[in-house]
Length: 206
Image (tube, rainbow, N blue to C red; front, side, top):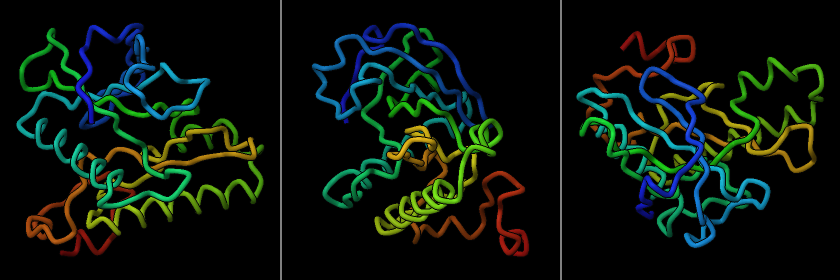
């Protein structure tokens, strides 16, 4: 994980907003000096993720940072190709309030999330490509679980298309680990998180 000065980013633009965070697309100046493993066609394009100003903003920030760190270090090696959106480091926007001025610097997924992608391209995706989606999702979850974490907020808006599914080298990756928790965390027994249509019925039943 690296700290990257906010002044190194240009063309910062908001591209999405959810219940817990705001996502920006940005260009990193002199990105090559940070030695990030990124694809050539998007080598300077990254995602900046800011958790909204609340009493839990720092908690969500640290959760995502911790889970991603364990997934991508010797504690847990993701098989190739990587199936979880990578966090490269973090930055600090001096213009924001102190509670939410830290942003994660993350991997850019040029084709967006699975929900929107299927809306726009469903008729063009054959069963082979749909099987790829299932394959990447299952294996991404396996890597998270093998490292002792659970996602807790998995839905089609958090499955990101790293490469176009119409290409032979398609990639669907799991993102948004801000609500993740260690599997043995005792607080899980009394917490309900996630998007209601995707929450397992037994969770509501206690």
